[in-house]
Amino acid sequence: MTPKVLCAGDQALAVEFSSRIDASVNARVIALAKSLGDDPLPGVRETVPSYRSLLVCYDPEAVRGAALAEAVQRRAAAISDAASASRLWRVPLLFGGSAGLDLEDLARMKSLSVEELIALFVSPEYRVYMIGFAPGFAYLGGLPALLHTPRLPTPRQRLEAGAVGIGGEQANINSVAGPSGWRFVGRTPLRLFDPARPEPFLLAAGDAVRFVPVSAAEAADLDAAVAAGETIVESEIR
Amino acid sequence: MSTTFSVLRSGPMTTVQDAGRPGLLHAGVSGSGPMDPPLFAIANALVGNADAAAGLEFAGMGGEFSVSAPVRVAVTGDADVRIAGEPVAAWESHDLLSGQTLRVGALQRGVWGYLAVSGGIATPPVLGSRATHLRTGIGGHEGRTLKAGDTLPLGETVAAPCLRMAEPFVREEGPIRVVPGPQDDYFDESAWDLLAGDGYTVSPTRDRMAQALEGPKIAAVRGHDIVSDGTPLGSLQVPGSGRPMVLMAERQTTGGYPKIGAVASVDLPRLGQISTGQPVRFVRISREDAENLLIDARRALRSRLADLMPKAGLVCDSGFLLDVNLIDGVAAVAENE
Image (cartoon, rainbow over all chains, first blue to last red; front, side, top):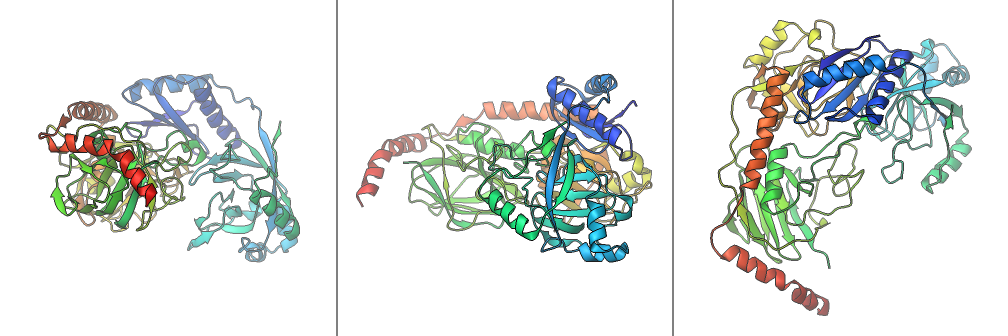
């Protein structure tokens, strides 16, 4: 799988592995990002992994784009798609409630009971394909096909941080409050982004996520723990 | 006792900015920072600040400010600037004494102006930077635009002469240059013809995130949806509405619209300075040419900053030095009151 190294202005290259969403493609993107992080090429400032492409930002005073494109191409050819250690997060999820605005509509659209929809939603292990759009905002792949649903025609003005939703064939966890056209099933007490924490960002591209349904009472306890600054979830390294 | 900077009145869009918040694009955090980095750098240099110091960015007009102890201030952008009611020149530094009001009035041209204060605005850094990111409410002063009544801490001022530029700062004119890619293959030649034409103006919905444009619709022949990928600064993207927009300092870090190109870095501040309703034309250039233009512009700016000159006359530095020496005495008086 030889990627295309595309021009993305005078300070960035886009290393495109595929035009599709695919876990093995995404693993290569993340492996190249890690390689460039561990053993940087001169002039590279930072990289942005996404589903199937890695943006490589560079300083043209330190390296010219044409030369860097060749070096990145060589580096990409040398990386393996052997899975590196990944982290699994068990994410508590309160279905319905103030954030689960679309739960019942989605069940009706899919001819499922709410219980069946919940069971289906929590059945897969999701993959964090990328963090983007907003600080710590996680795009998840692995949503069961029956739950694929187009975004709302008109976005809502404000969804709370922690809201969990569906957009097309993806799922997401909101990291900050803001407008969204996704369809939301509930919320997690976890904070994906908190600039005051020593580790401001909870999830990273390449992580795995399993949702664990919790009751309103359990969610309230977890909210209180999070508000008190306690760590309520640890990742498992695999 | 540290010096404070008080906001007596604020323009509609005055924020604390520093050189930006690099290194966190992978975590969804955009760089933010000034819309016009060269003007920001000049303002900082005029008051003797390091590149990394934080200052204020304003759109249209800045506001009215005062300080608790003498500082040097400089405004870049062609604004009407007054100290204690007296007009003073932009593009050079001036002493601002405690009790005096600095008024940064309307820009005569352009959109974004800068106010630097010696010592720099010393609000707490967030994720390594003081730059305000309005959309997520991080950095700067409480992550928001300034308003009357705000009080900001300042870093330590070191006494030094006021400075001016050896030559006025002038930008070249002409179309905004664009490097094609990474999804230029989603478009055909008609898109470039439209961009090169006289149909586009800057939309009133423009902000720190995007320079939205009004004008003819551009059709992406391969569709307006891509699998979301990283959005470099200056991305010229075309969403389903067909109205192109250029992603600016506060842009989202990833996006799902095809990017026909990216504005040459050297032209991005110039694009940001085009007023709402004014025309914008684009022209294609190669990556190599864009890199050369950026490298040349950076060298030229560094040389401009190295050539700042002490202002003529003795009033500025001697008066300033005198005032700095009096700080302890003033503070003692204040404590006795």
